[in-house]
Picture 1 (cartoon, rainbow, N blue to C red):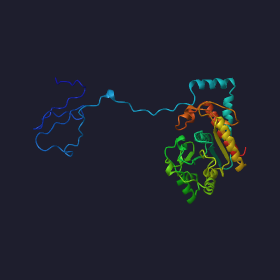
Picture 2 (picture 1 turned 90 degrees about the vertical axis):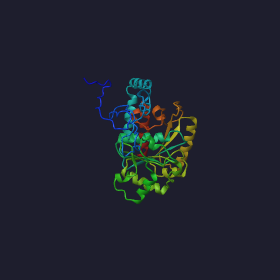
Picture 3 (picture 1 turned 180 degrees about the vertical axis):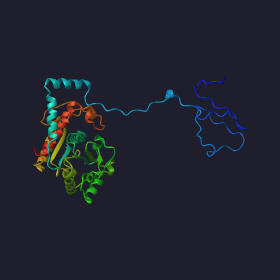
Length: 348
């Protein structure tokens, strides 16, 4: 009886060894097979003569293999304790918090006549201006189910497209050149150079390299672009950055139906917001201003009258924003901000 292999693999048939070789030819494909025998007579073999790759002398140890690392999952906005507390509070108030969300969603769904333009500007850097703009865009696109445009028009490279989850860049200068030089008859013509972010949300941004950022858009150029946007888009949200008195921001504010002013929920933020509001009212008394206070470190001041955005772990992570991972109170507050901005732009 023929000997049975102990490894479970079939034995290779016995073949006659060619003269001048040392060792036997192992079966092809055998795991952990030794290197091919060295030729003693004649010139060494070339790649053309033996195209099969030589396996490694020592097979890798499976015990030392590391599984592929998984991308870090962004935290939810609320902890389990905060979610439980929200549910208890909502039950004790007979669904008062849920009613706030319904009212805010109704304001976001309000009908509009022509495309509205909302400009978001901050009193300083790092106060959450881009976060407020991104949240407003995502909520407008998810609730209204109409075409919404987000534009990063900051002085330097911003993170608006990153927060919206854009898979690639879409330069504002290239889109502006195309829109001014070619006729725009349909929505696909308008968003050809923009990047889609889902839920009928499109985005245009600046270059990732500040040195190669787009040149500032003048008032006349932005007037022409904004009129084209309003013909095909329900809402256009512009992130104007943290320079409310720059020439770039002044050109953007000229055509805004509403201004969202973002300030930190601190004494400095309250004073700075009051000064900027006074300057905006003196220059454009007909343009409504919605002030948003943001809680940077989770500490609420509440000493001044403004719509607030609470601290949220998901937003603090700095990754793409997912509405499903927002905290309950953050979702309500962000919807109220978007509804207030759109109501102000509609003149209500």
